[in-house]
Image (cartoon, rainbow, N blue to C red):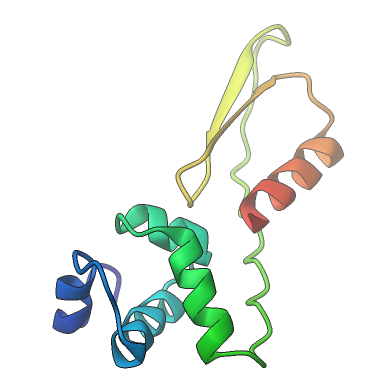
Length: 115
C-alpha cells in the first residue's frame, strides 16, 4: 500500500547512525517501493549513497532491480513549435520540443527512468 510504512522506518529516517538491523528495516521499505534506491532516498529525505552502501554490505549477491518500464500517455500536439513537459514517476521533469522523434524520446525516458 503506497504511503504506509513500518513505524520503525519512520523513526529511522531522522536518525544519524544506523546499525545493521536499522539498515535492514530501511532497505526493506525501499525494496517494497517501485522507486529506485536514489528516488526512494530523495522522496524520504535520505542520502542515496547511504542506502547504496548498506545495500552492498547487506545484500552483496542481490541483482539490482530492473527499472520499471516507462508508461506513456498518448498526447495530441496541435502545433509543432511548442515544448512538451513530462513529469516522471520519480519526480524528474523532461522538457522536449513537440516535434521530437518518438523513438528517441522513448529511449531518453527509459534511460532517465532507470537512474
